[in-house]
Image (cartoon, rainbow, N blue to C red; front, side, top):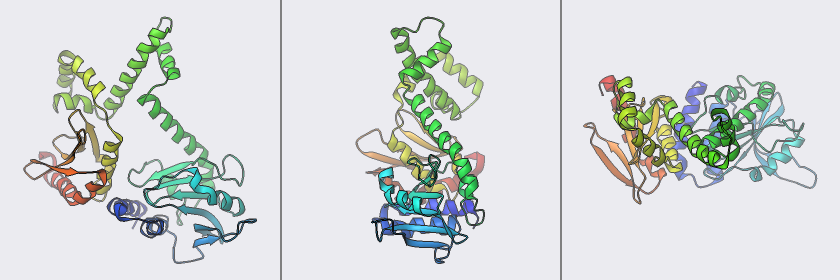
Length: 364
């Protein structure tokens, strides 16, 4: 299989099997070894390429083991430390990586729980592993910008110098993206002042700051929604002529628009469920075609951002959560679920729904 197919296949496996994996050893066998072998292309059964339980005594530390060492040209190039699927990854879990990185020839260290991968190098000080990763990978929500850099670590295209040279840019671009997400979602006082001084001509008093704090938040919400294929207007007036829709919104529903912007809150649980659905469907359709459109009563997951191609609905804004799945007649059946993981049990129905849309084409 090619690189993309291998990555997609492993992502689908993680989505389907994560809920039944209970130990770190099972995580390594089910997910990490396939990542090393199928995605990166190293032979996990050849000790000249991959050494499991790698030992390198350090000072008074004797017999400590790192989960995997990947070799290239007879030298250790990549170190991998594993945790159980579902366990959080943080720098406290990387103590052995820090020690081994310093005494081996490795330039890249990876901390993983089988789904999330954090990649480290030595940008801050030579031969000393950084405390923050330069790149992160989520197999259930793959960032397309990570793919070219991940390819550089594969056996066929190994270029550690290139990835280390690009690590600084990757590291700071990732931080900037997270910063922007935080500022747009919950703008702080400095950001509000920055915005106000560029669009408001008067003195920036406390009253003006309070006003622009609310306006900046609303503008950010509307901007992000418009970037997501104008889904907010579609939710209000439905599909149709874009100009007519815009006129209808502006003339008859300005108050409704503001009210919905304020009341629609996409929860972390809804985002997690969306990622699960994307992971399930990754094997049958390009995940870029699967989008989420949230509104007050439910969160819809659509194919091609088309509300006539609703894959499922998440009814999570109540005590009893439901997964809404549609039959061939487009009748919705609400299935009670206790948590996001239970969506995996209905993978076949979700896949069948997408296959039906694909078979029917634009007539759906």
